[in-house]
Image (cartoon, rainbow, N blue to C red):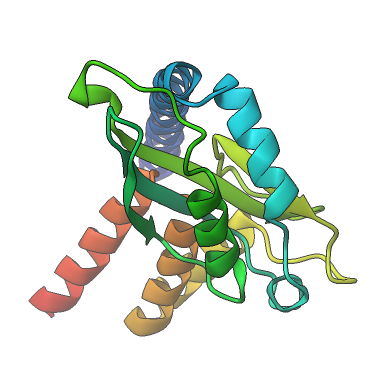
Length: 208
């Protein structure tokens, strides 16, 4: 009886901790987005709304990306100097399947669409863009979201990948468990809990 009570308390504690981590993640995401929108409102001609409108007019899912159930958050990293010079374009967490090229073309097309500034702190940008398919359950969020119809079937949810990770971990199949975590990180690269699970898994493997 005591063992059952202890297990229930442990499960309850884990659930509470997971909920707290989720709430903290959402809070940090909201703060990041609010700050980024303010900077885009200041630097981009027409503001953050116009930046989003122009991007969505140029970037869309490719048939290959849809067919392969590509869901993830691509992070656009670039600089725009105070004299309105666009430079240092790079993509963190690239998704491939023709999506990277579209995003790069969009960024290049914004040359001349920026306002000048007086402070260098407004020259660096890190814009998360979520690519997701209708019906695919994910907790990932982007400042901008590109959505497409499903490829004719429902793609795997976050919960499915987490369940598979746990099963592979229990069976000692570390490589497969890491693959599931990497897919989750591709979907939500700002979710620190995924990185912590990965560190724990790699640490456990090293001690065996």
